[in-house]
Length: 215
Image 1 (tube, helix red, strand yellow):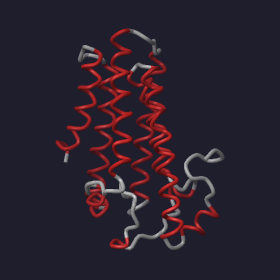
Image 2: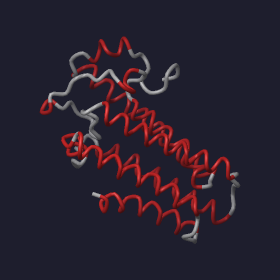
Image 3: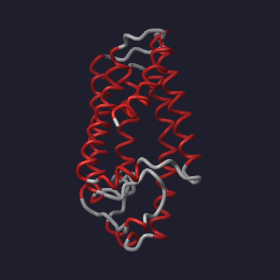
Image 4: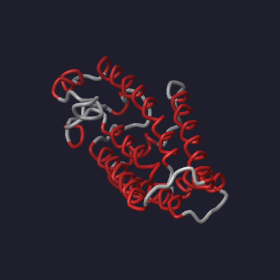
């Protein structure tokens, strides 16, 4: 499992470093290390307390999910390249305090993702109703505040990633992921309202999809 997680984060580190023309940028290493270590911890916890969810999230994307995955991968790749080039050519200057705050925001986002996975045994990475697993509405934990807390966590990671790696311009490109998350949130919300028993009533009690009082 650790080896499988090394590959994607190793690729991100390599893209950043190649674009920057150097492999000694501490922000690159700190950013990828936080995400890798957080993912390892989450996978190990799920392996112990919810192996069914871990297996569900490890499934390959369906035909319905595959286009959205590419919509995420391409802006992510662009943000890494822009961030690396920014560091190489000095387009922007990120203060150390802002960089540390960005790293903290990324860590907070991943911590929230872990809370979501512990609270919701049906938190699949695919857009589908899990009839085969007896899916039901979850309204506790972070789901008591917003209906899609995983996307709130992803928003924190997007906001923190640019300053974390030392690039304001890269941060702007990272923000291009937000409309994709909004689109996926709306898609999931419509599906759950139409197909998951009790979700419509849950939505009347928890009004906000991702950000309280905003969306």
